[in-house]
Image (tube, rainbow, N blue to C red; front, side, top):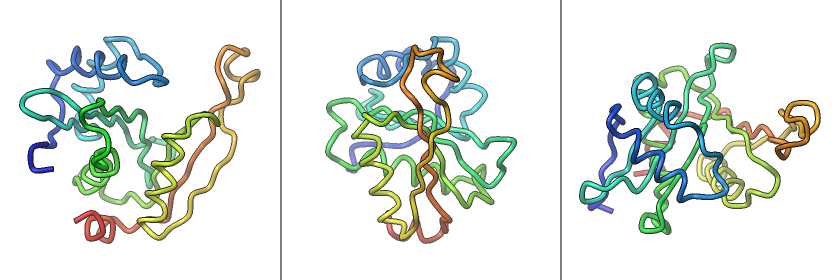
Length: 170
């Protein structure tokens, strides 16, 4: 684990982030410009895991203006060489300890019903953090995606105690 370092992204990471996401189906491929903006405008809410100068992990997120106590995890991508090391949960815990996440008491994300890897990650985080995971339909196939995308379920984990998360991650 010592061979992987975490850091905030910079704008020049955009192409490598785009390539990592493309190599991690079933993740939605955002535009290159979207990934660039995440690296530039949302650097305090995103994290890169780097091994020997290569990006092997990425988590993007933000604080929703309508829910200031929440941290929304947008995407989690881990390369094949980074898997099996709890990299995703370690990146999320590292993000949550940043000052930009002061006041966060819930972590939220959206997941399609068939994305078992994501459900497994977020269930394990809720267990590790000794809190609840609630699931409810948020964006429905027909009403929100005109039938072109599966329903996205809101996963809400919390309440969370950021100090305890860091103790348990240690």
